[in-house]
Length: 619
Image 1 (cartoon, rainbow, N blue to C red):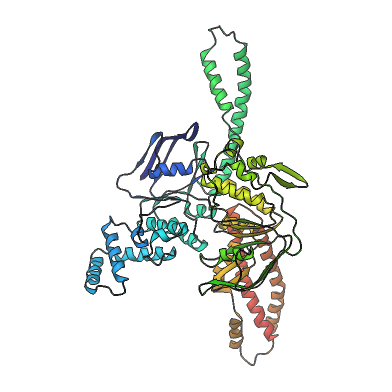
Image 2: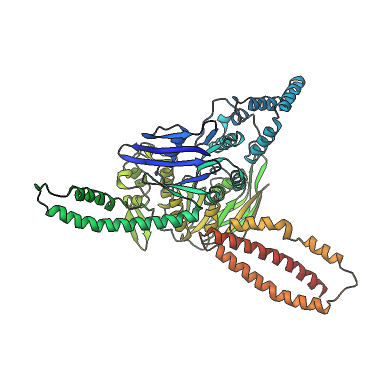
């Protein structure tokens, strides 16, 4: 059943074609990811689908009777409304009933008669399922105080309200623009599960590759105004895109050869001669168009020199901090080493951003100390966008930071050339910053950090608003970065590729250090309940043995000897798998296979280690 039909859709801004005669459809249950570099037209297309932007030509037609809801980047709500009033639809009788019931039932002294009447009406309209679903969704999104005024909340909290709004109303077709921004990892994984199991039709823009793979079954790419469709996951998209580009290059090369021959024929013909074959002249024009159709793809080149780092990088001793009686960090100790690559994970509000500020001494700790090495130079990429002067040009902003950029080995390049490498060509460099897109501003913010040649990079949600191509380039740059790397990110793919261990903010001030990336951490947590044994478990097993049995039987002795051979082999296999997982492979099938094998080996190790302990006690 076709829910959406887009036919001959075109849109231009000035002399630039953003969307060129696009045609596609969306059926019931179909889930599509929209990808493309910043400025390729993704947001414009979504705005046209939502109805906030008008196309120059073409049509957007939805099936009669279906409900369509959209999540936009910066949602707006009526002044003075509460969370409760925003997440439910007052035009829907059942939703209005639930608003009235919730308001009355949460009063300090509810009107008993009115409440009873509302309960009876809830029964008659079978509204309890809606209430239960709504409570579950609001709880998962951390929206518990429904009386709060929306205007007093942060942009991230408002985005969560908008997400709750579209999920609670259960539309037939859902349009999502970067739904994972401002969500912690556990909430993202919950949202993945909700959307992947749902039968709704979905079109979304996301930079989160794991989310994209889990939720969608088709990818639409926008490139230079044209649309390309790939029926498969992200890895399939990358493979087929490379094939398409190779084929296009072959076609263009052939056309260029033919163009040179035909151009020679055209030039040799007398200008006044009317016997030139018209069909050949028309064919020449078509060949010319093909020969010059392929534009060179812009690619971001991230290179900047990190300042040399001394032996002492950063030392944390007995660090404690909190606000208004809440304990965010309690007695934390760590000594940073050169080339440390650390990820930070934990729920929103656990103290991650506070921790970053303490490291840079923007905040003073309540207890303990943070001592920076003399050569340590921080580069801090903040989650919040910088307060740019909208009238200042890109080139003036860059020059206010540096006239030249060090590239290593004594080489420098002018700031204008560095801007070009950051996909700010000369015509854009003289644009006011206020005219840039959100992704371009984020790229400029990244440029400002790297231009300072830091040797300790702190990245707070660096993947928000960056397209997938830029992300791949940023990851490649960070892999070869010579300094320390500290990352807070909800992008699991980004974390898996770059970090070697994690600071896990568990709440109530506790921070644990986990040796591995995010996928290993989640895998470890998933097997702990069934396979990880405590010292108490071991004591209980020993207690079940007959007391008089104080030596090994021949069979047990052989088993004990065999375990001493098997355990090192299993540890070796575990390390080999960890090396493979950390190798930076983008083959998700291989990553899933290695992760599954790692889980099995962890289970086997736990079982054999427990048995070895039992036998060693007897021995």
